[in-house]
Structure formats: structure tokens, C-alpha cells
Length: 481
Image (cartoon, rainbow, N blue to C red):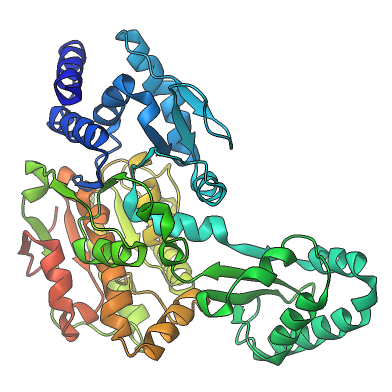
């Protein structure tokens, strides 16, 4: 049986290697079972597992490499080829891997990124292979990025050259769209949602053309109701870039997960958000397994005063600066400040740098031992493994997506048309899904968490944030280190 063979192999390997992660054997059995039964399995890993899942995934695949197609990011692929495969070879294990847009002909594990996954699905090349998705909670975002179209100034020139009979019409439409976009801009070099008669007239004109170069040919085939589109403006050159991205890629490419057995890992602990994505993809996992770590169940010291201003008030920026200054004073370890709002983050960084000097840096992976790093939530989630464990995490603003973002605005508008509660169906679950992974390094280091966003106590949904932080203990006042 594959499970017994994988268990024996990994047990032998662990005798020769030291590892403090307790789930290698359990994970290898789950992976081997899923490969043997060819079912759809979701394994929920502890937040911030530091990619310690590699061994439990790869050892069963060494016994059945032809069974799967492994979906990786570029850094993960490099780690597999340069670190994990040599590590297996040193222990006498072989895992033949295939890279390319066409499927392997022999018993090899097929390595692919998300764009290659989409293309293989469209071409019908996946066959009977099981999809292996190590970061299921990131799949929707990565599919959206892979499908995004960008139409720049040179693409208009290429279209006019390919269809000279429509040159005058294209010039007139581009000019009309440009004037409208720059008139609608609320700030320099901002993003403006694309809508109106000129955009529809362009689509109608494209349908009349016998052929058009990419990305125009793809533009003709998409349904505008399922995509968000906006323009990124460059006031200096008076040019703009047209961007189009699918609202819900798992719904748009429903068959990717539905037509194949899947083995998925997730580390954000958000069942509600995952269930919504599974519903969009038409998938119901046959098996759900949850792996926990004892150290992540230690109570987290939480500083969150009850009376704090809301982020949309005039006094909020000053409140954020004063509280951050108090939290940083006397702090001997690393402080990370999370704020998605670009203008507010730059303002706070500048003010803190005036107080604490070069200790303060924006989105840097090389801070001083008692440094202060200000960053977005996405940046922190992506780079936290490259930083020392923080002594404290300051949440300047909870990660509720802004409606100023064209993609968020379009997704909200679609939910409104369907009569859904767009805040509790979209914005709140996506924000809650970021919290466990963001605070996991803090639990490991024994640091403290400070939330300076008044919505935590001032809004009814703040209790859901507090629930997601459990276990925690309140810090009523700040004491010197």
C-alpha cells in the first residue's frame, strides 16, 4: 500500500535528519492516501509553516511520480530543483520531474506554474493527473494575475497597423477614451474604472475586424460582465494602460478543479473563504484534515484600547503616530507596522523616521535588530520568512479592501446586483483570512500585537476579528520593557 511505503520511507529519512515539525509522517500518509484513491483532499496546515510540508509531499510522489501535476510559484520551483530534490537524492530517493507546456510521456511529475496550468486545462493536456496545489488559499489570486490583460500604447499602434481600414475610427475612440479618463481622475497617476459608450464602441469595432493581434483577440472573446477593467494613468506622458482582470477566476475556469482530482494545502485557517471559493469552482472536498501546532495556541498579548478614532476621521493619523511612538519606545526587538493605505503609510513612516532615525524603513528585509518596518499586509505575508521574528506587530489599519480599488469596486458592484451582503460576503472574509498567517510569527516569538484601528471596538464585526485572534489576553496599558 502506498501509505505504508511512504510512511516507511519518510521514517527512515527522518532518522537521518533533524526536524522540529511534528507533522511529516501524518502529512505523508494523507498525501499517499489521496494519490492512491485519486480523491479531492484539503489539508489545512498550521499558519506560517515555513514550507516544511515539502518532505511529506515529495516522498509519496517518489513512489508514484506519474500521478500528479504540481502547481508551483517560481521561488517554489527553484527550491524544489535546487534544494529538495538534491536532499532526496542524498537519501537514495529519486523523483523524476518534467517541465514544459506539453505533458510528459514517461512516469514523471509534471511541474507547472498557474499560467501553464490554465493553458494545459484549455488544451486538454492534464488527462488523468491529480492536481497538487500547495497554496490553495493563493490560487484564486494567482489565477487572476495570470489571466490579467494589459493593453498599452504600443498595442493601439499594432492594431492600427494590422487593420489600416479602421485607423480613423480607432484614433477617434482612443482620443475619446483618453479625454474621458483624464477628466474622471481624482488624483494624479491614479486608477479609473473603464466604462461608457466608447469602450463598447471599440468592442463592436473589433467584432467587425477579420483578425486582430494579441491582446485584442483575447479582448474580443471575454464577457465584460465577468471582468473588471480600469485604466492606470500617467499624467506626465498623458498616456494610460488598460487593465482587465476576471472578477472570480475559479468561477470563470470552473473545470480546472472540477474535472480533476485535487490535493490541496491551505494555511490561512479560513474555512468560510475557502468554502466560497470551492462553491465557485464547483468542488466539494472528499477529505478535510487539519494539522495544528501547540505553540500557536499560546495566548497572544493584545493591546487594543476601547476608545480609538476610526480611520476615516481627521484625527486618526495623529492618533496612529502617537500610539506607534509609545509602542516603539524602549522596544529592543523588531517592530512591524501594517498599513495598506499608501498615503497614510508614507506619512507615518516619515514621522517615525524623524523620531527614531534610520531604525525606520519601509518594506525592507534588512532592518536593524530594533528596527521598525512599515509595510502592506500582502508584503508582510510574502516576506515574513525573510525577516527575524518580530517583537511586536502594530496593525495600523485592518486589511479591509478599499472601494477605491477598481477590482474591489467591480466585485462589490456585482454582489450588489445579486442582492448579496457584499461586506460580509466578500470584504470581511477576505480580511479575516489574512490574520492567522500574519500573526503566526508573533506567537512563535512570544511578542505582542497592537491594533490601533478603532473599527475593532466600534463596529459589530470587530468581534469576528477578535475571535480570529484567539487565544489572546488583553494588555490594558503599556509597560516599559
